[in-house]
Length: 403
Image (cartoon, rainbow, N blue to C red; front, side, top):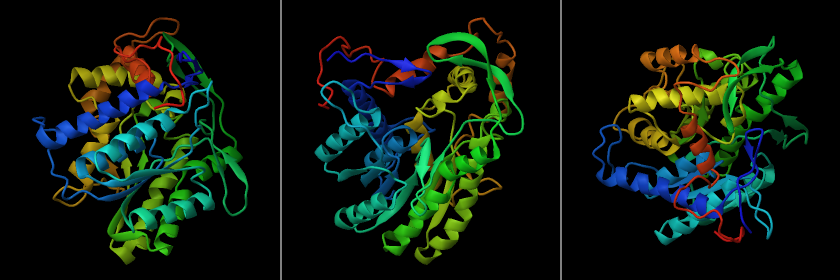
């Protein structure tokens, strides 16, 4: 079939297997280059000896989770297990990009002598936790690092069976701000109605730290966490511009719960001399971030400013810096006053944010976006779904079942 990109309300409905394979290989190549022979002072080289060798990534098929898997494997020679919920392809329908990414990564990792496997299913369920535990026992014995990078619109409580749904809404009052769609650079007004109390509670249930804690509890019970094991969950804070819909909204409440869970988990991990951290990462184009109103406009301005200052990073660059400069550096892990690791530090530089705010003030409803990198945002969104690579023939007939 001829696989074309189809986007509805900033959600891509298709993915291209050859493009996803290329996307994964590009990230692998970047890590290999920088780990072994980089002259870039921002990204030190490593022989991988101090990095974890057995890594579990919950949500390791796209975004920061996929990058965590790639960095662990190709900077640290780690064996990895991914847990994610994916749709497999059929003869006439493409898989999710996460399925193609996973197949491409595991094929290459196996060729390179690394163990790499996945457990596909509902990561919130007890059944998938049990299946993952069995896989760890069979393939690794224990794990040295657990990455928690799940993003989902809903969660079924494994105890009560109740289904909770997350929403992207402000709290207390409506939010009005400028935004753009990925398919059009015309600035428009976005209005989001406030969440109900039930929606706030449900969003925390889905996106907060409860499931992270359940995973660590279960792995501890099963004696699957090695001595000095660490676990890291990913979060985001962002600028004041996006606070009403993000940090002060329903997702922000969930992220606060996630961040507050780290201290309790570190206490539990004392039995293996382990630690739990939350890493606050940079704003980047992911399948989740693209649907948050206002955020695409902010990212377009941020990308342009950071590129002009030569400090823009993609997901894999961020995670490489997290591993090499924070988690496994030859010094104590650097955190802020709330115990969070901040690899959004370049994004939140005062001069970067001042310039973004200056450019935000130039935007006018009904007019094209100015002084921003909308092309870069769109290209990144396309590439995480396997599109937008100039050397791939998208008119070619391909079997969506083959990676």
